[in-house]
Length: 216
Image 1 (cartoon, rainbow, N blue to C red):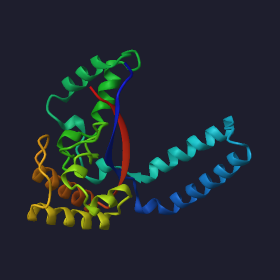
Image 2: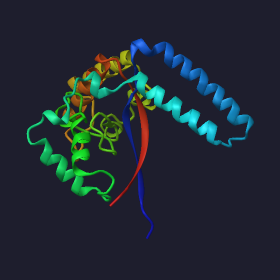
Image 3: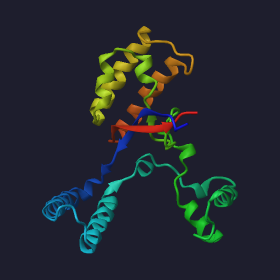
């Protein structure tokens, strides 16, 4: 039998540009447009020079963005108790342990942010398991035939996120939602509100992402 796939939808945070790097981002965007035009004329053939240029643009753009971890001031893993033991266990789970030696891997792990204590993590993480993504699959069943869900199909700015959260709060307070067996609807809606307001306060937006997963 073939694999049975189902589609789920989740919110992903929209990258936030560092204020002091806005001018540089505009320049990078112009270079990307120039590269796109050149590729179109070349019928999409990406040569070595174009590959290097694209990689350089991606690296420069990444340096201009403020990560959710930084914005939320999430502490590094190395400040957690017994974090070295966690790192060693993680190394043992890697399929190819020859990529990094133990000391290098532990040092690399220690520089990662500790998502387990982030105030912005979601109780309903997306399919990928990234803590600051939100699984929206239940929302459409908890608020069936609700026009509010239509806006989920589009990117939301920080202001729109706050407005969306206020609408969800109204439905939760008035009991205007469906009850599900799989999840506690009031708790889920309250988490939608908290998640949106937290990241909106830090200046992030959210965008929908559709993810296919294999069903059991």
